[in-house]
Image 1 (cartoon, rainbow, N blue to C red):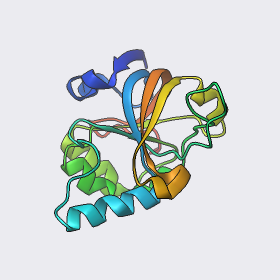
Image 2 (spheres, rainbow, N blue to C red):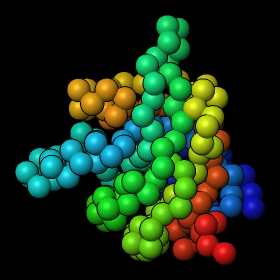
Image 3 (tube, rainbow, N blue to C red):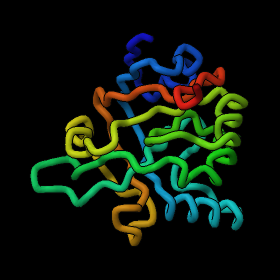
Image 4 (cartoon, one colour):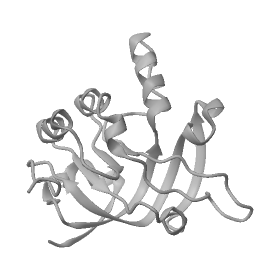
Length: 176
C-alpha cells in the first residue's frame, strides 16, 4: 500500500496506478450527488437532456453537506452510504464517470462496472464530516437547488484524504 497524491484532472490517466488499500490524497473538482440527485440525473437522461456537469472523467462524492457556517466554504461534509447509488452507478460509469467517493461496500454490478470502465471507488471516513470540510476550499450549487443538502454541488478539494476501496483491476478491500 502506498500514498498517492492526485488532482482530479489527472485521475482518469492515473487510475490504473491506484490499488485497493492505497491512501489517496485528492485535490481538484468533485461533484456531490446523493439518491435524489441520481434520480434526477436519470430523469434528465430519459428526456434526452444533458447532465448538469460533464460526466466523462468526473468524480462524484456521495455527500449532502450541512449548511455553510459564516466564514467557511462548506458545512460538515461526510460521506453517505454508497450502496444507495448502486442501481445508478453502472450506467454512469459506462458514460465515463471515473471516480466515486463514499463509504461502505458496493454491489457486484458496480464492482464489475468499475473494472470494465477502468474507474475507481474511494472511501472517505464516515463520522468525520466536520474534519473533511476543512479540505474543501469552495462549494457552488450547480443543479437541483430545491433539493437542499442533496442538491448537486461543485466542490474544490484540497488534499482530501481517502482510501481506495475498489480499484480498476478488481481489487476490493471489502472482499475477504
